[in-house]
Length: 200
Image (cartoon, rainbow, N blue to C red; front, top):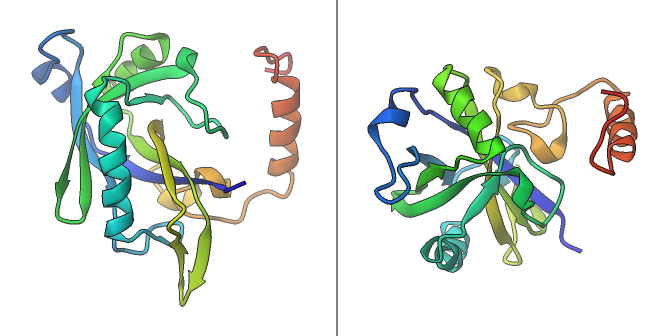
């Protein structure tokens, strides 16, 4: 099974943009920004070739055209997009040099309303690709291999210090964390697996 690859990009959205741009049919707010950058070593030390992103974007455009390019608020460690957690729908994708750009509709779902409230209150968020693929060490970078498959983009919290993400799957950069963080995460996942969290 291919490992889950997650990359976080700060998504600079001004609260003003929520009122300026709306979907013509639904009236929902539209935000625009960078979804991904290729041909550079990213914060995880990974390198994505442009040809790889071009191939995956071409395939993902079917989802965009079918109005089902959905994403979640926060990352699950899953290949499945959980509809109960959906917050947004990507309406348009285009290239700007080596950057993948996107126009994203914020949906009036519970998670979408949380995302909208965060942006309205000036909270910095990140957009994060979720995909499956293998890695190969090439010099100082981990090169994402040809078996990469893009699943979606999610919105995640983005600390002001990109290096403060705590786990390798959800980070802007891999950092040293408290040795008990992983144990706490596993215990929480087990206790909350049925949808309720008795310890929270």
